[in-house]
Length: 248
Image (cartoon, rainbow, N blue to C red; front, side):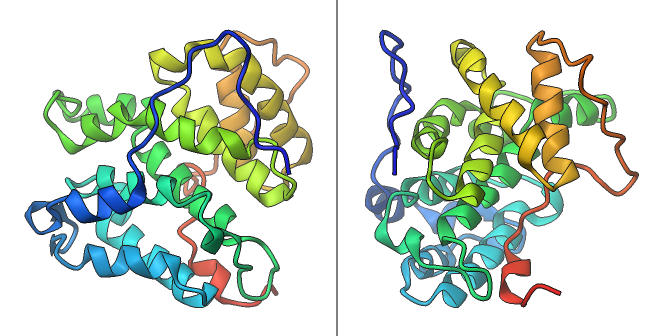
């Protein structure tokens, strides 16, 4: 497995604090979630490290409801995302999901994809049309967007992962996170991963993310047929619940 995605001479993005520090030093009870305060979050987050992948996936779905309900961002969203990103390299992330023999790491990455998309330029621009001031400096949304270089640093080692699902999820997360101006120097490198997603992914929303990234970064996409957006399709879908059921 090759986790070396850094480029010679390019400054590193800042590292996330260790997940243990995020868990212990965050005042979860003072933070807003979709259903009150985040007092329950330490127990939910701890279950992401359980040896049973069913427990992990269920906890991740519960976490998504608490800090990402219906695409909203709450005070607890940013520290929760830091914790999830911080455990990507944990041995528990290599547990295999039920029925599909896919590492839980792919599900963790896809969860981060959803949170990154909720804070993406596309969503912000669309929302600002109806709610001016939506992106104020002191909002939970701004806090999550400010984390993008740190989250990218945690995601990037898995761009060359040996497992296809992990590679694709890491690529999607990196493409969305790279909207941050501090990550502009990474975009030429990430264009290779965008092309790979377009060539190999069987998921139309994921292909759309890759196509839009290439287009936004000034790459020639005239050889790629634009993917039409369905009315119900607002971005990559990956809350993890589907992993609890066998494929049909």
